[in-house]
Length: 83
Length: 83
Length: 130
Length: 130
Image (cartoon, rainbow over all chains, first blue to last red; front, side, top):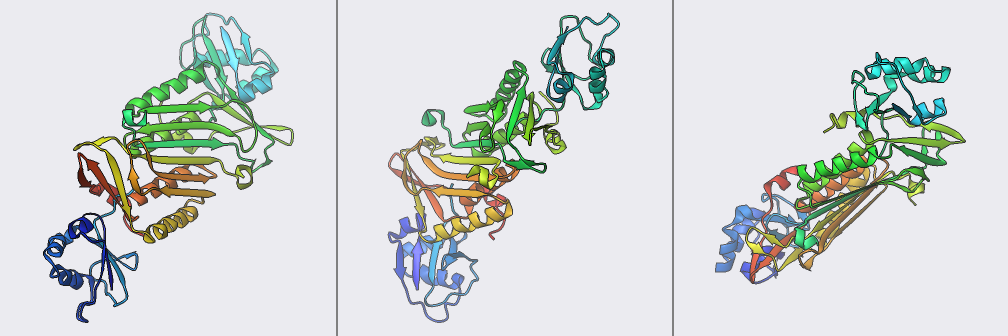
C-alpha cells in the first residue's frame, strides 16, 4: 500500500511517500490513520490533526469510512488551495 | 432646437437630424412628439410607434414628461442594443 | 505594474459578431451610436465600476460602424485584488453596455436591414441608471 | 474558427500572484500538486462545463512550482454562443480549481514557509463534486 503526503504533512514527516503493509484488520481510512499515528513521533504529530486532513484513494476523494485494499494508492493532505 | 433620430426612426424619416422651432406651448417631450407627428407622413409613421421610442435631452435619458427648452438637443431612438 | 497595484485577478470579456440568427446568415452588422453621449455613458459606467468593485483597472472598448461575422464588437477588461469583484464588475459593465449605452445594431441579411430588438431580460438586469 | 463555431462571447480569467498578504511581503509562492490526479480533475471539470454551459471551447491552465509575485498562476478561458454561459462556466471552473483540484499553496515570507489555508467561503461555493 502506497501512502502519499502533501503540504504541511509532508513537511512535518520529512517524507513525501512510504510503502506500508498494515494488518488485515485495518479496513478503512480511519483505522489506517490510527495505525499510522503509531509509526513515529512525527506521524503522531501529523495525525493528531486528523480533522484538518483530507484523503484520497486511488486519486478519488473519499471520506474516512471508506474501505481500503492492499494495492491502493492513498494520499493524505490538507484542504486544497489552488487557483 | 435640434432633433436627432437614430436607427429605424432615421431610416423611415430619411434624415438623421433637423432644426425646429416649436411654439411656446410645446413644453415637454410628449407634446413635442405630437407636434412633430404633424410635420409629414413619415413623421406620423414614426411617432405612431411612440411606445417603442426612447428619448434624451442634451444626451441625458429622460421620460416623456420632461420639460424642454429652445436650445435643447433632443434625440429619439429605440431601446439600445449594444454589446 | 501588476505587482505595484496588488492585482490578483483579471477578467476579460470579448463580444463577437455571430454569423447567423433566426432570420438567416448575417452579411455584416452595422452599429450606430450617439457620438458624444456614448463616450459620456462609457465613462460613467467605468467610474461607477472602479469605485463599487474597488477595481485597479478597467478597460472598455466598443466598436461601431460595419462589423463582419467573427469580428470583435466589444471588449471589457477588469482587474481587482479579488476575483469576485473582477467578475462582477466585468459582467455589470457588459450588461450596462447592452441596454444603457446609446448603440443600435442593424443586421444585414440578404440586402435587408434588420433593426435588432433589445432583450427584455437584458433591460431588467440593469434596473436603473446612476 | 470563431465564425464556424458561432461563438458570440469569450471570457478569460487570469489569477495573478499578489505581492503581499497580512503576514508581510511574499518572496514567492510554491504550488504543490498531486501529479496524475490534478490532470484528471481538470479534465473532469472541463468536460462538465462544456456540457452544462454548452461551451464551444474551454481552456484551463494551472501552474505549479515556484511562482513570483506578479506572475500568472491560473488561466481559464471559455467561449460560448451567449455571454451568460461563458461567464458562469468561467467562474465555476475557477471556483472549482480553488477547492476541488489537488493544489496547495505555500507562501515564502522572510524565509518562513506559510501553508495557505483554504477559505470556507470558497469551499461552500462548490458544494459537491460531480
